[in-house]
Image (tube, rainbow, N blue to C red; front, side):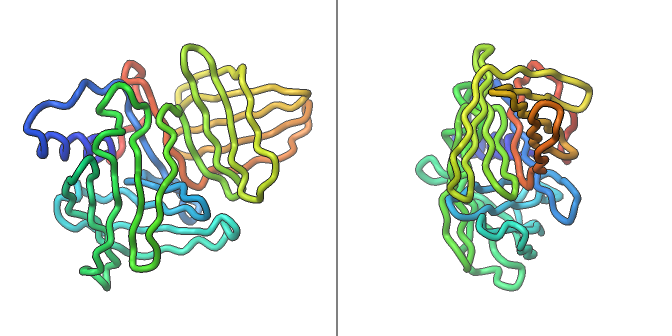
Length: 248
């Protein structure tokens, strides 16, 4: 079940009435051991990234998942652990989905999801992941409500906005170097997903993402300067556009 449908199910169960008509679909992914797979949720915290694989079934009862975490100062040291996800319950605008190590099922961990800021409300393109709590950390996640894309590489967070024909690109660099902010982007679509291009002062920034992989590439003229694959990312797709792939 997708994160969006899970939120909708919990919203309906809590309210007993239909949610507002969704305008967007949000799909999230995480890359582990070279394989990109659907993610239940991931967190861009100030100093680290956490990501959960999608459970086989809706987490109405505990389901096995993998929790990946890495510090932004050491992104190549990805730690993974087997966890149990679910069940979830709502309180004051937040859904708390239980998240505990398989060997510590009563550790009182959780993933905190917004029951307000999510794609079931047409005002939002992205669903908010508020925080992760495990026996080892309790972190808050940064939220970008109107982004069409948000992802993290080993070096930076990348955000793309696409509103009213205006396409914008921004980065949050982990090493404290000057962040990039570009406007005037263009988008092209093929059979596997969108491709964004930005040009500035002889440099070309290309961002490609789809359900199998995603990367940002920088060129100076025709010279390739760098390619950075995304380790975790989310795509917000208007529901009028057919998604490229259904999540399990």
